[in-house]
Length: 131
Figure 1 (cartoon, rainbow, N blue to C red):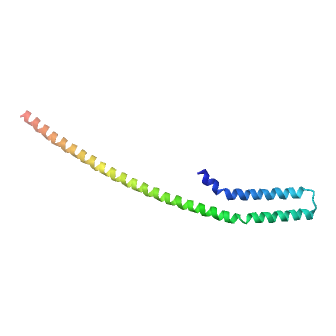
Figure 2: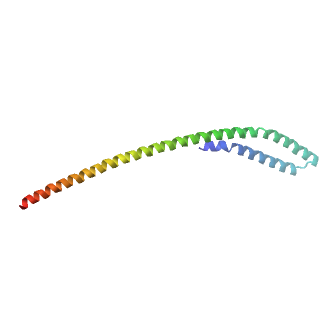
Figure 3: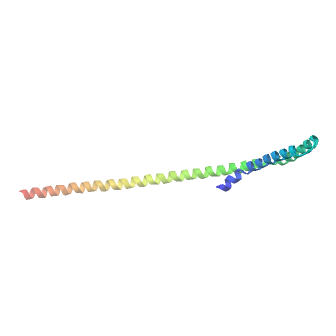
């Protein structure tokens, strides 16, 4: 899972790196003992270079967005399959429970019937002894 998380943050890391590099370069140029013209020229050249490097970033982001979307679709499909499997298992469990409930009810009813028959037989036997 960390692997996917790292891939998602690659673009942010690259962008953060460039932002840090620009900030560091700007500070270095501003405190360096150069003339205003030289400093402006260095900043302009550095800006051009940075702009050129950043042109490839949108394509990288598009590629990562496509990969992330594909992973998302795969995860949704997997989730649907898991939900379907869970529903199947719940249905099987319900059917099993209903079957066992019917079996238990039949056994209880048979026990009641047998107990009633035994009670009648015992009552008749007791009545026969009393006479």
